[in-house]
Length: 212
Image (tube, rainbow, N blue to C red; front, top):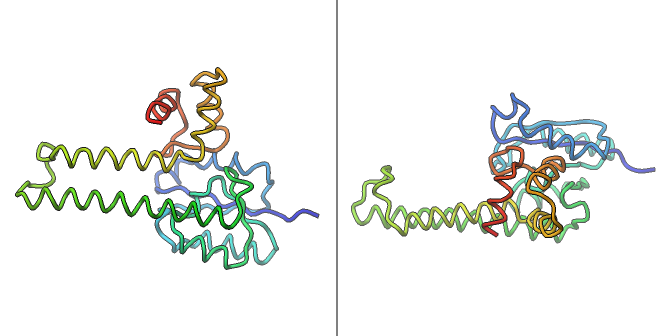
């Protein structure tokens, strides 16, 4: 007999939580597991203190269920947090990586955490260098070319991290002759959202493919 599943859905802003933006795509992604219960969190992925996730884990422990999420980043981009979750003895599955094992999850979390730290440090270094030269921060006209490049690099790194799991799919579909609209529809229906938490559009697909 297969184990029951408990769904954990998360959005990053109160506005998204109230409007349902992003939740329906996640709910559609986990639907195939027919979850017996659903827990919704409105919280930043950087924070480890999430009562709804704690409640979902408690429910899994109580019923012996498997925690199911639409995407791995719905849990966290933090090695320690993922490790603690796994040590809690609760099985979980991510719809975008159903065959991921413990090693895979740790590596992904470690890479994501390292990239986030590098982006943060580059931004701090660029701002510190500008401030040391007497530049008044806060005015876009005062940004140096180096600072602009650092900002652009940070945005590209963020996009690369966010879309690393679906880029191969996008490229394969495009190579097979699928239209940008078809790719956008496929991604949205599969529960993948843009970094802004929105459904995919042909323009967004084209932008990611061009950057790749």
